[in-house]
Image (tube, rainbow, N blue to C red):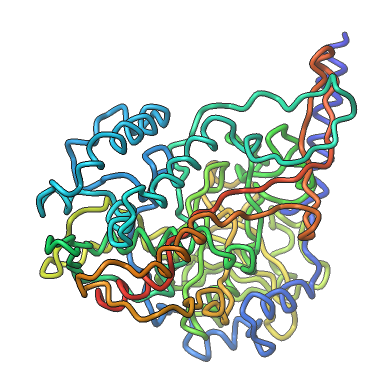
Length: 524
C-alpha cells in the first residue's frame, strides 16, 4: 500500500509539473517581441511572418559560413592530444581518460625531453598545444600540462574538485563521491562552434622556424585547435544571449504526443527545477532567431541539437522555411498556408495550450543546416576543404495575432494536425547568440613585436604573459555575483541530503591571443 501511495504521489507531481510548463502552458504573448530584440540586439527585430517572407528571409545563409573542426574530446586531452600521430590513438584511448593522462605524463618525462633531437617529421606530429609551447620556447610545456591537469581534475572529481568554499550544515555532511565517468561527448564544442562563425577559417599551413633552423608546421587543424580553446575558455562564454535551457535528463519523459517534457529529476542542478529544459526552445523563438540573426543580419548562432542530456553545440550554416496547412498537411505558399484558428480549433490537438488571443495558425517545416564536427588531420592547403554540413528537418506551428506577429506555437511530429500524432521526437534543446561587440573580449596584449616565423626565440615578455593566460582562473564566487549551490549528504544518515551555498574556481587555460592571432592571419 505504501508503494502504491508513493507511486500515485509521484505521478501526480509529474503531471502537475508537466501541466504547469511549456508545452502545456503558453508563453506570454509579448515574450517573443521582447526576447528577439535582446537576442538579435535589434530594437526593430522582425516578429511578423508576413514581413519575414516579404523581405525574402524564408531562406538564408550567414555571411561567414562556419568552418568545420573537432570538438576536441576531453577524455583524449583536448588540444593537447597528438591527433596527427595515429600510432598514438588506440581503441581504449577513446573511452579512458586516466590512461591518457598517464601517457602524457610519461610522454613529457621521456619523449618530449628529447625535443632537440626531433626531426622535422617528429615535430609535425606533436599535439597543437605542444607545438605552441615549443614556439614560445617553453620546454616545460606549460599550456599542455595545464590542459591535461584540468582533464585529470575534472575526470577525477567532476565539479567537486573545483569547490573552494562550502557551507556544511555540520561535520557529518560531505560532498557525494563524484562519478568518475567522463562522457565521450565532453570537450570544447562551445569554443569551436563560436569561433567557427566569427574567426576567419585557417586554410594554409604555417611553417615556423625554431632558433636551431628546424621547421614546425602548424596545420590548419592545429590553428583551429588553438582558436577553439581560446574561445572555449574566454569570458565571451559568460556574455552570450541564451534562449531555452539544457535538458538534464538522459531519458526524458514524453507527453501523449511523444514530445519530451520536463519532470522532476535528481540530475537537474539546484535552481533549474522549474525551468523548461526538455520542453526545448520554443518554436516561435527558434523561427524568429533564424529569421533575424541569420536572415536579416547574416550572422551564425549556436544550437544544441541534442534534445537530451548530452550537449552537441553546432553553428548554424543556413535554413529554409516551407509552409503548410496544419489541418490538411498540404504545403503551399505562406498566404495560402495560414489558417484562421476558428476553423481549426475543433481538431487542434494542442487546443488547451494555445495563446488566448491567437487569430490564425500556420505550419512550418524548416530545413535547418549546421556545420558539423570532423576528425582533425594534417590537411594541406592544396586539398579540398574538409568542411562538413548536415541538415535536419523540424516541424512546428506558429500562432499569429491579427497582424501576423508570432505569439506562440507548438512543436509537431507530423504535418497533418489531428488528435493523434506520430510518436518520437528530435528538436533543438537550446540556442545562444554571440554579442555583436564580441571583439572586445579578444583584444591582443600590448607586447613588443615578434614575428613567429623569424626563427628568433619568443621574447621573455611573450613567455611571461602567455603563462598568465595559461593560468587563468574563473571564479564562480559571491565576490563576482555568483550564488552557487552544492548538494551534500549526511555520512551517517545517507537519507539526509541538502543543498547548501558553495563556491567554485575553475582553471581555464588559454593560449596567448597575440600568438593565435598571428597564426590565424598567416593561415588565411
